[in-house]
Length: 301
Image (cartoon, rainbow, N blue to C red; front, side, top):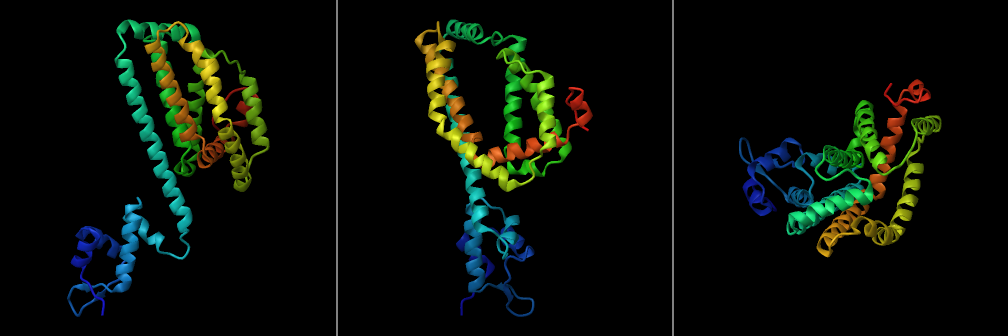
């Protein structure tokens, strides 16, 4: 008869005493008592269950996840796909960090004169504020804030956030975008924005299946145009920015821009990310004050 003690199982599966106790409290493991007051005895079913548990733990699930995993309504394929998605996002972020570190090292090798020249040329050629100025620092901080806001809204957990939080963060994003629009010389009136938001309020998207189908088609088109985007950046945008720089400075800028655009494509342009962004945006629009929109103002109810 197949029987094992808790200590034997801990040794085989490299678990500690606390892990086994937590699994017992969650009733994921159900050993038999070997007589009154004696230690628990684990049979073949417990062994097989613990083998499954260990594999799920190695895949990134946590002990509190185990009770839901071993139920009839647990969708293993869906949960595993989500876990794979999480790890892919982590890898993409790590690769971006690695590239940025490499870019910083490349910039560090430039002389102070080259750096000043590079920043000056960029300001002249892009209508961006001069490097080191208060406007530059404010714009840079705004860009970071915007990235973090987008990152938050592109995750599934953000769909559980309160409507108030959704509205506050989207309004933060709106106010952060305004300076970028000014520097990029993009003019969109408040009236046009409010009219567009009123249209969305009048025709709200309720069916998630419809949204997902739309997102799938949109993501497919965006990914098809990825190479074209890179070609346009390489042939049209980059030459304008680096015109007048020496080769070393130019190479640093080109690498940084390419890494940034590549990260945006790989990290944010995915079905789950854009679905979450659109769903959150619709919730935000529903949470706006209709009378304020009619008066060309944007504020919460």
